[in-house]
Picture: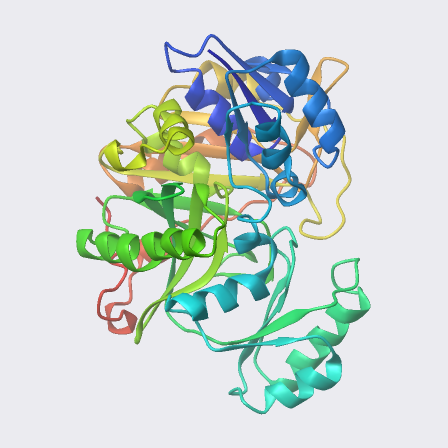
Length: 441
């Protein structure tokens, strides 16, 4: 079958790479793709914010299945538009994607359905922010309501910082566009884990877990980014925790959305904080994460196509998702200046050497690259996702990824050298009951 993948980042490169392993996939087409994806699939230039152009591509290509990678086309209703035209599409409808596209909707939904989450307040003015802050401890989280490419969450240590952050969100100074609504949220402490579930409108089944690194600086310092790296291991969460999150978060979410006549189908990405009070949902995403996807798909033994078809056909409850034993890691090589302003068009050296060493256990996915006069150049903040796995555990996987990265260079390249540092240096005294248990195997 022909599969159309919408998107052009590292997540989509990993999806295309995984799909092409299936004997049932005859062709993968990617719109718009990137410099790396172009080496393994046919790419079609397109603006993913243009529904008309995406629809035109689907109508011309007539894929048997369309997979939507990024959140923007989901928020615009690409799934609805293609389904109305008779296409099979993997991903949630515009209404169901509100679990990600509106944090206010998500928080209120969780409250209605008894899904554990932090105390919060939805504010539409700075005056309301000042009033609501009196209900919170000095440390508080300020969140933009809508999509913000991973940059709309501000951790504040004082009410004054929170008020200043809210003012910048309302004015547009922080994100470039003025927010009309924001969320104040109780500051939670603990380990974070990204829990992924496959949903078909009625059923939710666990896929895998990962832990990502949002901050630009080592030791989790500096501003938030879209993600500077991730890892996935057998022991990231216990089997009991996996079952608990499946039943009390993922399935409850699917049941709640169904009860509200908004069936949810696709990937439910649950950002979880493991607090002393138990697991609590920080946020939902309604698609695969980036860079977690790169790490998870390298470990996945079940064909990715089977997951997509089970969600579309309503048979997720019959699917068993198998992961290879061991650990996988993804290290992001980013442009200089990221997560601020970056300069594109920097030539990348070393890609031919690492391509010759590529395997099912070591691969460089392209996140923000372009082909310019026959040369791969930078074309975004996050440029490459160096990914590796090892059946022997986390440390060999990390060694493999960093050894590959040592061959790559472009002007201004920056990356974190401490991916998976929490797993390598666990602090048991800070971990709660039903906790994330990190291990090296």
